[in-house]
Amino acid sequence: MPGQPKDAGRVGEPAVATARWKFWGTAYAMLVLLTGTNLPTPLYGGYQARFGFSPLVVTLIFAAYAAVLIPSLLVAGPLSDAVGRRKVLLPAVAVAALGSVVFAVAESTAWLFAARILQGVALGAASGALTAALAELEPTGDRRRAALVSTVAAAGGLGLGPVLAGALAEYAPAPHVLPYVLEIVLLVPAAAVIAALPNNEVRQRWRPRRPEVPESMRPVFATSGTASFLAFAVVGLFLSLVPTYVATLSGSHNLAVSGAAVALMLLCSALAQLIGYGRPARRLEQAGLPLLAAGLVLLALAGSVASLPLLLAATVVGGIGQGLAFLGGLTAVSQAAPAGRHADVLSSFYVIIYLGVGLPVIGVGLLATVAGLLTAVQWFAAVVAAACLAVLAVRRPTPLES
Image 1 (cartoon, rainbow, N blue to C red):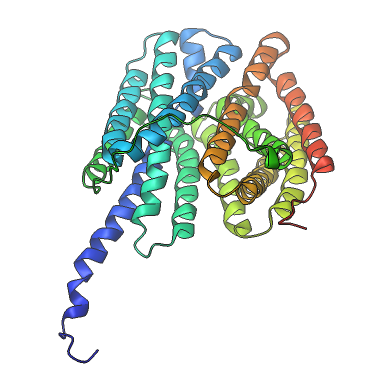
Image 2: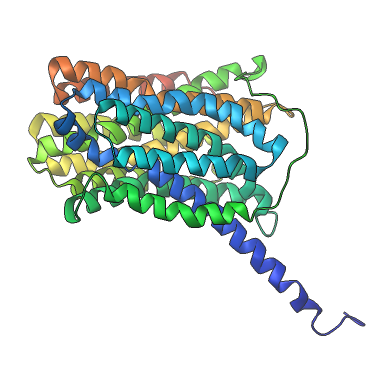
């Protein structure tokens, strides 16, 4: 431009670089927090042998996380809008670190419940604030890109936790301590990034969110919400009991293998979401629900014939189906939400998701205590597969899809 100093373009370069590292640093914080909450996944079998509890208790420990995460999400999400991201996120990181400390020094089953509750509180408080911070910090203002980074970071943490903990527990000393020590170390730079975030408080009146669905969109919420509930019920099963299921089928207690099986499912889910991003919601659900059902059938068959190749196929097919079904449900609900009610509707949607993660596995754990793990997983697979096909049968296109 005429009259513009030659170095004018360079003046903004430090600001752009600062914006970028804050954005990617926030994504790192989300990745590390999700990684920490999933470190226990391949270790539950060791805790079970060490403290002598049943598969039902495994699922209850896992579900305790979801039980506190939901109210934490509804309370702390609006709080970060009122008082600023840092004032919510820094305590959340501290609580997450405390959860890792409790896991590392656990001496009884009660310690595991306490650690899991701390993790649920931390993630519930941080997830909404981190998602909002990513949208605010995206250097070009592209909120769609920020949402994609948020999704990938969350899925990456879900998958990285089991792999990291499984590998360390199998090949490094102190299997029930070292993974949590590493998590605490990784949280330090996350805290540093959060401490450098801008102070965005708006001094508005704080009020916890209440899950609510407008009457006009209840039919689509019922079907798409149910589809996502089922999709995350499968995630809950993989994160709680599938590592033991893998060990039972293979006869191997290699924790790295158990963690990798869970991570593979979540990786396939994340890749399916990346590929399906931007496609119509109904097509995503039409593709995802049958694949999810097929993956569950393969999971049940793998138990019947003790076949690891079938288990691998079930993991891949089910993971792809889970990712597409979830993305389709989220897209449908988001599109159907009335103007001015988007945040309320999505809060209700995420409550459904976390209920899907926590509730069904309790039933699986109870049945496993009575009838055995293989039978319990097979019954779960049959019921959820049938429910997937039922949702697909009653799903109707919304006005936006017609």
